[in-house]
Length: 340
Image (cartoon, rainbow, N blue to C red; front, side):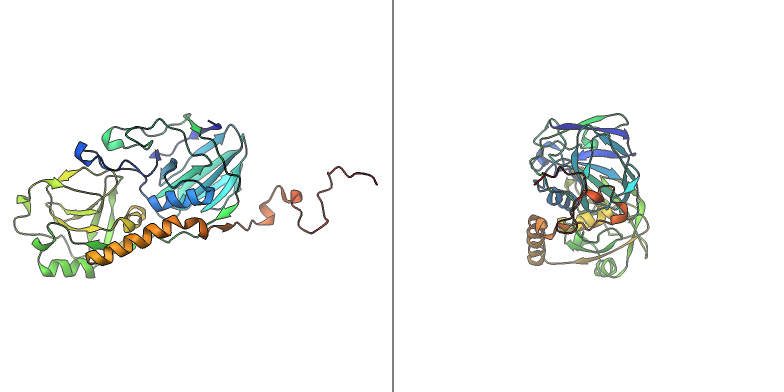
């Protein structure tokens, strides 16, 4: 390890997350991992490290942190108010966190899930190939006040970089593919699904997100006779009262509610980040379009480093302004000058 980060104050739903554990559905374990995998990749790009690097996920509210040594950090996902020793820092950017300085992260100003990344990633003993917590499966736990997290070796040096995030923090358009029970719903119901907005309900966590249709619930004949079968993140189950429920990264692996459609994986971060009361609009795409959309999303995530650019800092907030050689030949004034 190259240092430690102490959690002086932890928000209510703070966990360590990476890309999760694929390939264990037969064992009854869903993939899990970051609720917003795009935010995970954005932070990795800012720090120049693999997209699967373990980061800290904060739901709605951050906390306060202190590092034992100088460490690079990046802040991504749902924007939250952040400051280092009281001085505001930019979200969706990388910064130096000096040893002993206090990093404060407040409530989200949009979206739901924010992420704190460190150079070298957080150190955790892997379980089934990942270090992320999967609370519904009893893997890992919520992080607590006073807990200390190890930090892995950081081979990078670049900081003060920023990235323009894809806006996914206010609801918006979501693409679907048909699911196994889509054809059981009447044509009028499927047309209504694509024409009316749905509000994200207050019930939401890493297992699922409840939706409230403007026109009331969706019902089908024989919906209660559906045999339990495999379910995946993105599946939209319709419960007995007709309300749609989008399964998220920590969902169960089997279920018997009819599924009216399945959210494309590339749009699942938008569902995860949509705050309560915001609207989502759904539309179906065919399988060929879905495959192309997923390929384009994977390509974009792989090339996020190309979107990073130097952070333009406000000189009024730069305590170390005099250490910068702003004009050729001008120095701070405390250098040793060799006499001629």
